[in-house]
Length: 156
Image (cartoon, rainbow, N blue to C red):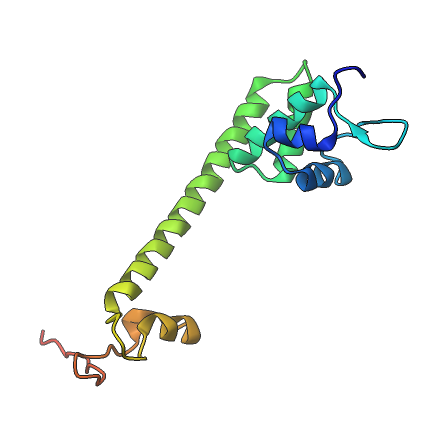
C-alpha cells in the first residue's frame, strides 16, 4: 500500500476524528482496513473515499444506522434509485420534525428571557421554569414590585 495513510492522516484528510474513525470500524460501519506489519491501520484511497461518504452523510444528519443502509445502497450497483429517494424523503420528515422541535425550544427560551428582569435580583423565571417544569404561561409572573401578578378575570 504505497499511498496508504495512517489514522491521523486519514482523520485530517476526511475531517473525521481518529476516535470516530475507530468507532465506525468497531461498530462495523466501516472497515476493516489493512494493517501495517507493526499493526497500524492503513487507509487506502478507497477507504478515504468511503470515509468521505460517511462524513457527508453525518453532515446531513443521517443516523449511523441509516448511513449503513446508504453505504449498502451506494456500493450496490444494481440498486434502485427509488430506494435511495425513499430514504431521503423519510429523512426530510425527520429533519422537519427536529426543526419544529428546535423552533419550539427557541420560542420557550425567548419567552423566558423576555420575562427575566436580568438585574441584580435573584428571582429568575428562567431557572424557576427549568426547576419546576411548569410552563411560564401557567406560573404567576413577578411584577416590577416583586409580587406575583394576579390573573386578570375577563368579562364575557
